[in-house]
Length: 140
Image 1 (cartoon, one colour):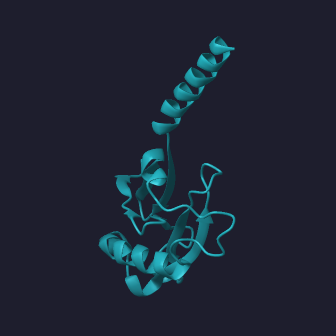
Image 2: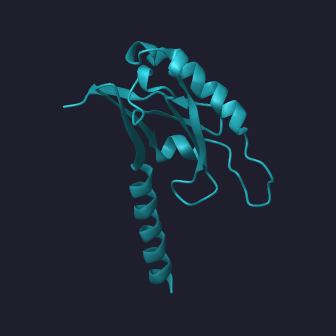
């Protein structure tokens, strides 16, 4: 019995360490640039949980949009005009299927004169209000 308990403990410990090193990312493209937002398991685990007994998450979609919009303004040099871009989608995301959630906030052009309608920039907002800044690379 003691051996079984030790095996279970080490199996759990190995799994926990593997999960700690994991991350997920959201990648989009806009006007010849690639925007990648990467969130580590550790970052997500430090945020408030959204329990099934709670009616609402720690921050509202509107709060997530405001935080993401402030960060998006830093990327205006990559888009033709802020006037032609807006928040087009806000999605609750549960990447590890537990009680830690985040928001995926998408910005895109609303007018073909302001950019390719397939272009978008995704910004991840954690439930503690942290905005994950995307890394930017040239599309090859």
